[in-house]
Image (cartoon, rainbow, N blue to C red; front, side, top):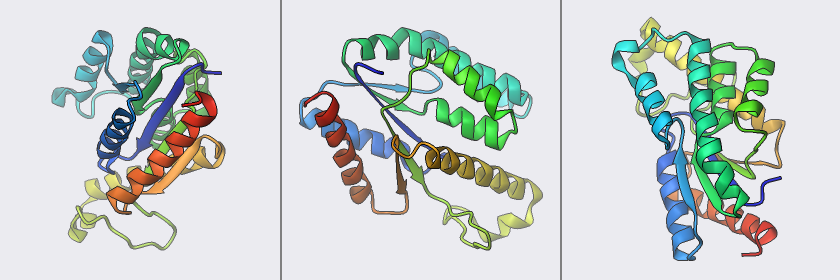
Amino acid sequence: MNKGILITFEGLDKVGKSTQVERLIKHLTTREIQHILVREPGSTETGEKIRDILADPALKGKIAPLCEFLLYSASRSQLTAEIIAPHLENDKIVIADRFFDSSTAYQGYGRGISLDFISHVNSVATNGIKPDLTVLLVAEKFASGSKRIPDRFAPNLFDDRLEQEFMDFRRKVQEGFLDVAKHDESRFLVIDAHEKREQIAKKIAAAVDKLLKSKLKV
């Protein structure tokens, strides 16, 4: 069990995670509660170099799914050992923009890598550390029969095979996040990202305040 508190933010890209992370930090700062923010991959010298590899345009489509997963895991292992674990050991609050649930959703459900294998590597890479609270922002509805299309996508994009494959991948990842949350409900705060930003921020702040009161007596 963590001595400090680890709060993670998860969800598809462009669902507003960064905005809500910033609002939570502002909330904690207003309350004069010390905290540290980290991101995946990155936040360490090693992790930032791995991030450069994963984001390299020249390597787009050339990194095998397993290699991709192991790169993320390597960055996560360094981040945990160098920053997260020491801060939790000293009763600090750590906020992480993505953590191991992203690998489960993206590389597991999305890329098709064995979920058992991913679970094992996730546990090893984090030394068994689990978040105390995971905020999952859900922006797109992929329910059976749903025709809802995100506003940022034009309907005619579905006529293009590559865009269809892209949306199919996002659907798998979204379902992965929701499945993980379903099996670990006590850890997750699932929020519809289409709600007003202010409403989302209030829900997150309330959940965090409750966690701080129960665990750190803040």
